[in-house]
Length: 99
Image (cartoon, rainbow, N blue to C red):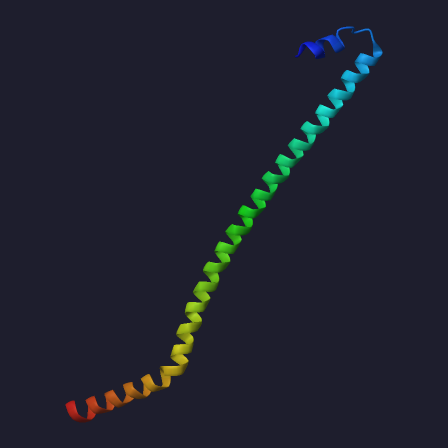
């Protein structure tokens, strides 16, 4: 405590000094309460952001798998008939000429 502060509060019987001390303590309490609330809010926000990023990561994996599956289905739909026809022709030639 500084000398000025000691001098201000030295006469403990003076109600003005006690009122001043109580006001300053209330101010300090308000500041500390606000700081703690801010820290809790930031912690909560960080936790929510972590949860959101985890969900985004999981969703992106699902969408990637779905995109790969859809691409295969489209390839099969587009080239499947040609591949099937080619396979039938190969079986026919094998049966006709190599048997």
